[in-house]
Each structure stands twice: as C-alpha cells, then as structure tokens.
Image (cartoon, rainbow, N blue to C red):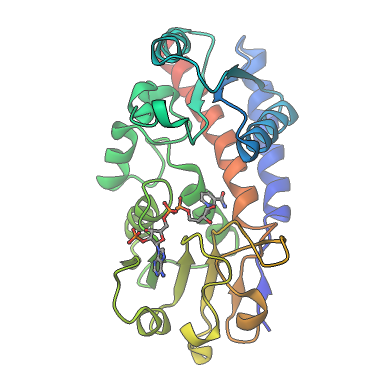
Length: 290
Ligand code: NAP
C-alpha cells in the first residue's frame, strides 16, 4: 500500500521558518505586506484569497484584499494595479484569477513588477527557471515550487529519474517541467493530444497529474513493479460533490509507492510557497535598498 505524502508535517516546519524570518524582517523595520486584487464575487476566489490572507497573518505578515466590483472598468482596474505596483510598502502583489470576461485579455502577470511577483508569472521570473534556476534567484510559480519542496522533504532523488507531467498550463505543467529538468530529471510533458498516455505513464518513475479531470488517472496507467511516485495536483469534485484530485486514489493505492492525498497534499503546499515567495521578495527588496 502506498505511503501518503501529506503537506501537514512539512507545513509545520515551513511555518516556523517563515514566522522567524518575518520576525527578523519586522525587527529590521519592514513588515512583509502582500497586496491582493480581487475582482467580483467568484466564490472559489473568495475562499482562496481569504485562506491566503489568514496564512500571511499566521506567519506575522500583513495582507490586504483589495475588492473591486465585477463590472469595474478596465481603466480603474489598471489604475489601482499600477498604484500597488509603485507602492514601496507593498512587497508582494498578485491579481486573483480568473478575471471577469471584459478584463481577461489583460496579461496581469506582466503588469506586476517582477520583484513583487509572488505568483511567479512574470516573464523575468519564468525566464530565470528556463535558464536553469531552481529558485535561488527567481520567484517560482507556487504550485510547482510546493511540489519540489514536497519531493525534497520526502528525500526523493530527482536526478536521472523519468518524470511525466500531465498538463501543460502556464501555472503548473510548464514550470513544473522546467524545474524538474533543472533538478536533472528527464521529463516528458503530456497533454490532451498525447498518444498512448497510459504507456508513457507506465514507463515513469514520477507522475505529476495537473489535468483538471476528477479521478482521471487509475491503476491502468501504472506499473506496480516500478514503485512509482504519484503527485496529484487536481482539485475537482466527484459525483457526490466531494473534493477529489486527478488521480483515482482508491484505484492506485496498491499500485504505487508514494501518493499525495487530495485534500491535504499539493493544495496546501501552494499557499506555503506563496508565503515563501513573499518573504523572499521582501528580503530581496530590502537587500536592494541597502
Ligand atoms: P488547465 O489550464 O486546466 O489545463 C489542463 C491541462 O490538462 C491541459 O494542458 C490539457 O491539455 C490537459 N488535459 C486535459 N485533458 C487531458 C487528457 N484527457 N489527457 C491528457 N491531458 C489532458 O490546468 P491547470 O490550471 O494546471 O489545472 C489543472 C488542475 O490542477 C485543476 O484541477 C486545477 O484546479 C488544479 N490546480 C491545483 C492547484 C493546487 O494548488 N493544488 C493549483 C493550480 C491548479 P491541452 O493543453 O491539450 O488542452
């Protein structure tokens, strides 16, 4: 039976570390401040932003959620975003996605200055990981960063491993592929047009599922003799309305070595990474002023 790789024990150590770093920053005169922009009343976004605020306050940082109505004009939205971008008291800034349709053409990832880009979506941060950075210089996208943290905490060696990433989004799949490559894994990036996905997965040492389809990956994708490691990024709802991942956890349980649960796995790591990015952004900004 698989060992469940949970976020909770890892979280405890990271929270302690971030709380200490935050206290040191405060002592030196700066309280790390995260500014969130939230447009409309999209209910998952309300929950996500409230959880992020609670987490920042838990580690001793401050967080403000700037709420704008769903019909806010593009002009007003950009004006507020620029104001936060230029505010020296704002250390981290992000726009909660999705935006309403009339704003969705805006490339907000590029409108946030790269040094405040705690989501890690700015071209300069993405270029750094494309150039080989594993997070020393760049603010790395939170979900892939959290997955790397989990793998490291579990002492899972990446060098020389065959990793399969399913999903090629800008926020998870593609940066995940780059980070794993930077840690010397050999990566296959899969998507909806991949031929014979089951065979590709059967040959992997590590499978990262970021698809957005409830319980998509079952034991027919696995090779039990390979002791595979399965990372489930998906946040979906099953037929009974319960939260579930992209992996059919019951089906794979006896066919793999390590499995991240949903909930209690990657989702929790994403907020931890956001906290790490806020502290890092603040430290970098102070370092620049010195
Ligand atoms: P996304 O933008 O929704 O894209 C889904 C990806 O899955 C696409 O690349 C798509 O391929 C691929 N795909 C869809 N059906 C497939 C199939 N049958 N076979 C192979 N690939 C298939 O992805 P996302 O934003 O990364 O989100 C993925 C999941 O992760 C969602 O459940 C989301 O809620 C969750 N998520 C969780 C966290 C967290 O903190 N845990 C963070 C972000 C996202 P094409 O490109 O060919 O269409």
